[in-house]
Length: 454
Image (cartoon, rainbow, N blue to C red; front, side):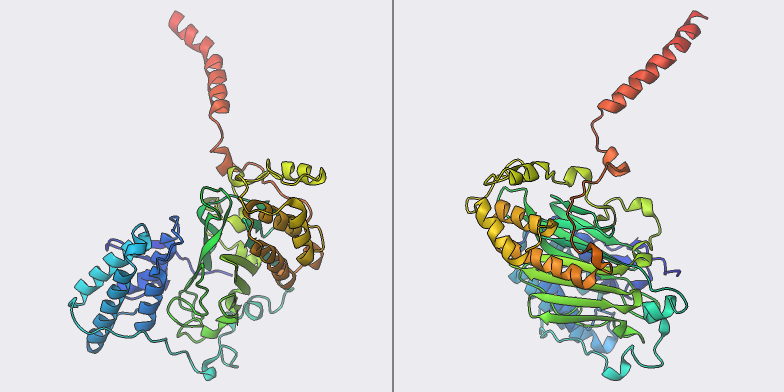
């Protein structure tokens, strides 16, 4: 399988970026990738509603393609509505880079299309979806838009892998390593030729190093005749049942329904099926925070142009060594019957955390098997005091049962502490390098002395 090559392209307009052939035909086409890139900066989980403004604008402009001359007045009205929305949330978005980029982007577009700041505004409208007759399941639909049919017609069933992120936060990688990490701020979970997934983790409690996922951005890249580039964004208290442009499938291409989003439970559970790459994604909001789970073929997981450039791809490589939490003390305290594993906690315990016995009892109710999901549940209750983390661990295990191809690996019992990689080695203390340099100087000293004597 030879996927289309996609590379980031920076345009001449400040603040606008696009992604290869999947980019739109105007400045608006660069917005989805810009939104993803801005998530690489820690975002405040405040009442700032810039994502809502972005989504409404995309819905009003049916995906943001460059308007025809006859549509210019309507487009300008949508821009003015967009500007009004940003002004309404300005006070709560002062430190949000996405907000400031949106403001500058609006000014740029108004200038390009000669829009006046005063004038009528428009109400956002949802993009019209294709009729059922245009479904990818039609007999004449492109076979390439169904992964198993197109790539494995005469071979064995592909090997599917699973990755999940939940709680405070706990990571299960594609290779079934289980780690608990700090990873505050924005981190890439997946980055291959077909899609990017980025999460933002924020402190659960003020001043605490315990974090949980508050924002999620998924970019499905433009793929042949199957799907247009699509962006899905979720954050605390906003779990949309549609992509950022208001659509629920892959766009206007013939195989558009090979990418579909389905709301399972309103505001709590969304499932995204990407049949063209054999991938299923589950996003949940449990309590205040988000969980992520994916089922993906190994072939898609490994479809990368430059593997060496993906040192922070968490689902593939795990958390960096300096971001992992050591649970040896946790096990020691647990085995001794201690009330709180303080040495293992990433931060001082919250005032309202549960006693150890209560945390164990609450986790046992949902997770009777004392595996790593059970241990993660206990740890989260002890460090946060938020009982919703019990459900986060429970649903994470339920997603594994649904998505993992190897039913013998549903339960894991030993945590994995990733050995130092090249990226981690670069962060080590300079002491070993100083020692190596000293040895090298000693080796060269006789040669230097001989040269001086000559």
